[in-house]
Length: 113
Length: 114
Image (cartoon, rainbow over all chains, first blue to last red; front, side, top):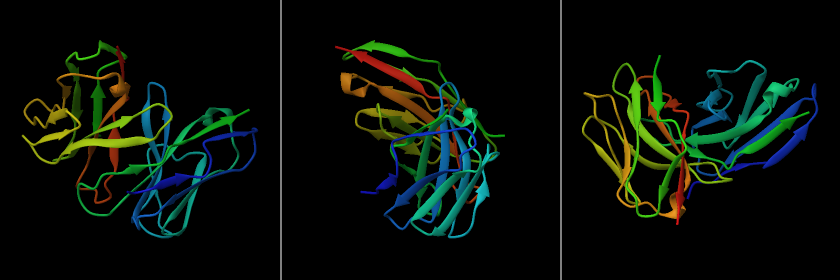
């Protein structure tokens, strides 16, 4: 089975801190994604990557950056955390090609105080 | 742009009742359609998918048929169980982008009581 592992289930940080969320997948998938999930808004795509060192902005990239130095690892960075970034963050991965499903981690619930 | 609209929740049912969760979409091209399920405290899991018009996806007793004429992909189950209580997300994938980006609906919470 595909395993997507997010480094923390719960995280509490302070306004202005630099925050790193880590995601690792073990199935050699080319594509990796970061979403945030908020009540009433569903999942919104922040950034995605289709190869090592490659990244593309999603629908809501402002205030975030990403890093993909190795194929299995995709990091989400909040450069200067703000309270409106309190949310559930979900990482996903998929193989390249058509109609490939995305496989999700269990999520990180991030609170910015 | 592409979008997915789901019925508002929560949907509250008794065990063994019939379930329908409505999903309609707006898209250019010919997207693939998916249903994902999120159990409490977990990430999303793929429940079923359909890749072209009139395809029926099915899994664990759930079914959905890709209806191009009504741009719909409604999720159905004949007899729900308490263990089906979860949030269900409808999503579409634009095959032309080449990157398998998914557009999700807002999710529908299902509560099944014994």
